[in-house]
Image (cartoon, rainbow, N blue to C red; front, top):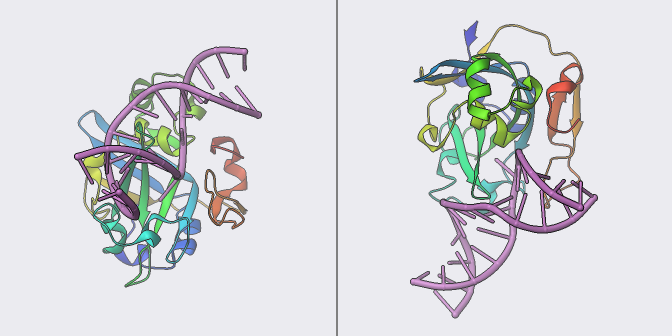
Length: 191
DNA sequence: TTGCGGATTTCCT
DNA sequence: GGAAATCCGCAAC
């Protein structure tokens, strides 16, 4: 189990969205350690009309202009948090939206957080996984090389990766920038 | 200072 | 398959 280093995140955003598949997100909470394997991502890179960072550098999007390897978390539709991993080459903004996880550690805690039993429904969506993993704005800007929130590689081979249009995006809706491994189809939000 | 649109989920039909 | 729930960032007034 190797924690990903800074250089891992310092690469093309769309490429990062694909290599992050299969890696494990770990959150250390007051209720214990929670973790899950990344099984679905979307790329929001520099110049993409659908990316928050393209609208300009603001206090909200500041994190995506900063150093790679930090967490960008935002609140949407008044009730959901979404988590992104800031990944980009130097000097341009960009982030990878985490859309689904396969729960690994702390499953009982996640069930409690989500108020439901079905293990495949715990983290199969960007708003769902943040609720299950207790991710909120207190983790905005968190350094993924720290001990509270980080990503590790356990060496699994995810196999063939499928590319699909992104969900809920109205701009550049034809671009295939959503990724998931074919064999993890059962865990994703929309196969 | 106000108003509007949004990288969603859930529940109902 | 469609609508409601309901907060924040940002642009315009």
